[in-house]
Length: 132
Image 1 (cartoon, rainbow, N blue to C red):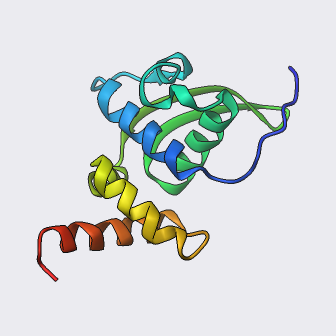
Image 2: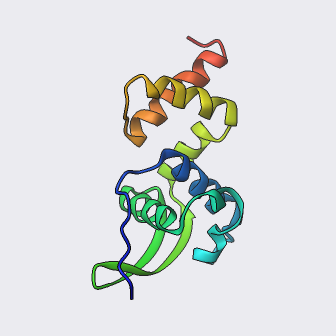
């Protein structure tokens, strides 16, 4: 198996795309395989970006996934459903307009965590509803 170099920076657009794909394609009791991410929202990202994102999302508790490793590299990835935390994050960033505005606000800080993105998105939603 060939070792690939992967940029170890989490791409928030890829995070959103993977979560959208899991929500749209997951069937209860089944698992998605990597081919399920080659079409749809995630198709604009490289295989390495998608793999890295899935690994991080599983680690953070946003998705249920099984990752098999060989020699320190992911060999097989199966993705189940979103977790409660994954649903909460996706619910805040699903709308394209809200997502764009969230990223615009976040860009002022340079780099922010997913939890901060969720907080910003929640603030953007609150503002758009006139609740602030």
